[in-house]
Length: 361
Image (cartoon, rainbow, N blue to C red; front, side, top):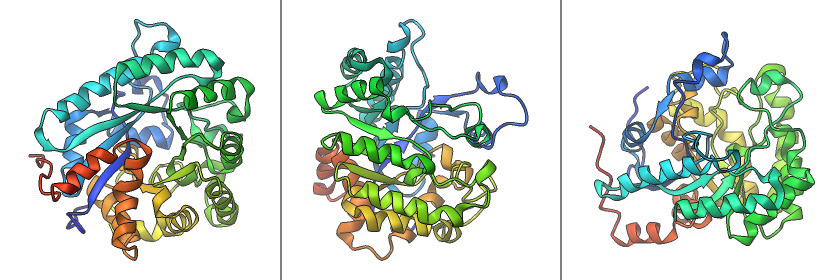
C-alpha cells in the first residue's frame, strides 16, 4: 500500500519500536505458528538499516525511543544482568545515528530496557548496570501480559498471573523511583485493573500504558471487541484518573487485537485503519488528554496491519481535528517529556525543523 504522506512537516518522535534478529529463534516454534509469530516472521531481522528505511520513508521522524524486546542479551553475563547487553547494542545504534551521517534524525535517542523486578531490591543492581551502560537509558519494561486462554498469547509470552501485585515485584518496582526511571506496562485488556492498582500504589512513579491497553480480538476473544469495548473504556477512564500514567496510542495493528484480522500488511489504506482504531484512540485521548498521550509505531510488530508510512497517515487522520498544540503533544511533545527528550525536540523546533533526516535510498 502506497499513499501520499499527510502533513509531512509535522514533527514526530516515535516512542516505541524494537530492534532484533529473530532468525535463529523462529525454527524452534512449531507450525502452524501463532499469528504474532507470523506477523514478525517477515521482519525477523530489524536493525539500523530497516529502521532508517522506515523512519525516512516520508514522515518527519526526528527521533525514536527503543523498547526492550529480549534481543541481543549478553550470554557472557549472569542471568539477571544479561539484559544489559541489549542496552549496549542499542546504544551503539544510537551512536551510529548521532554521528550525523544520516542527517539530524536521532534513532534510539532514549532506551527502555529490561530488568527482572521479581528479584526485589536486588533488581536495583541491574538497574545501576543498565544506567552505566548508556546515558540514553531511561527506564524499563517488565511485561505483565497473561491470559487464562493460552492461545491468546501463544508460545512467546507468559507472565505470571497477577504479576504487578506480587510483593517481590513491587519491591523491585520501588527501585525505579529511587533512580528516576520510567516504567512501561504491557498487559492485555482484561488485566488493566492490575495497572490501575499499581499506579495507585505508586502515585509518584511514571507509568506508560502500552498499546491502548491491548484490546483483544484473537482466540477465545475473536469477534468480541464490540461487547468488551465498554469494559475496556471504563478501565481506561479509571487509569487516566491516575495522573502518573500516560498512554501510547498504537499497537492496535498487532495480531492480538485483530484490527485488522488479516495480515501481515493487510493492504488496508490509512482511512480504513483510522476507522477501525478511532473508538479506541479517541477514548484514550478524551480520557488522558493530548499532554498524556502519544502515538507509537510499535514497529516492526505493527507491520502486521500497515506499512510505516500508512500507519502514521492513519494517526494523522485520527488527529485531524486536534489543534496544532495538541498535535505537537500527541506526535512529539508527550514522548519528549516522558522519555527525557525535551532538549532534543526544542533544538529541532528552534532550528525551524529544516534539518530533516536523510531519506533512505
